[in-house]
Amino acid sequence: MLRGTVTAIITPFRDDGSIDEDVLRKIVSFQEENGADAIVPCGSTGESATLSFDEHIRAVEIVVDEVRRAKVIAGAGSNSTSEAIALSRRAEDAGADGILSISPYYNKPTQEGIFRHYEAISNSIGIPLMIYNVPGRTASNITSETTLRLAELPGIDGIKEASGDLRQVRAIIEGRPKGFCVLSGDDALTYGTMLMGGDGTVSVASNCVPERVSGMVRMCLSGKFEDARRMHELLTPLFSVLFCETNPIPIKYVMSRMGYGSGKLRLPLTELTEINRPAVDAVMKDLELN
Image (cartoon, rainbow, N blue to C red; front, side):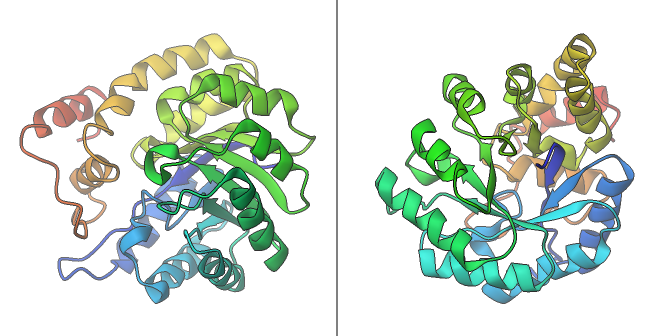
């Protein structure tokens, strides 16, 4: 079971739009030095939607090469099952420890279609698969019933739950088989998820504050919920401003201010607007991230 803090890292780009491999390595080292238990390259935060197939695999290879301790859970999802299988196999060949696979977006499959999609991917690889439920991006929800059905399949080891519905999260936690991990997919709900027995988080905020997010998660795992609550409250303004515009626009701005890349995004994403910069700058100052 994967427990703890999993950072969904950004993909840094050079001014010419290519992947900045040196900065990517620097980000991986920063995460490992500050308590991240695992790293997700090429997830939503890593702008997987605008990476080519070869760029996607290259980013995974770089992260695998750079890590010394943390697990690598490669983003490898698609709304085409055959494409998701191909990407997952290549990520496995690149040395990833596991796969994070987003539920099929745009097609809006039925729950049976979602089940068969994940079943097919899992049957095609030899490393663990983590489900990623994020209705805000996919336009469909994986119900708790479907998640628990998938949890019984060998090779499907957990879920990143970003539905925003804590009742659904509770139903999964209470009904899951032994060894199936439930990770929060929303920084603002990590504390609440762990209060109910969740196992950690797949975090955007830990890009810039890995020590504090991982510290809060460790407190929860050791039952120090009052200490964890104080850290949660300290970080709540950050959790909020990081979603003032579409992720990863704000976190790439923050990371660039901290010296991790140019902050460049690929269209159709655009840089953080001037109207939102003062609020992000204020939170960075309060957390001494400048």
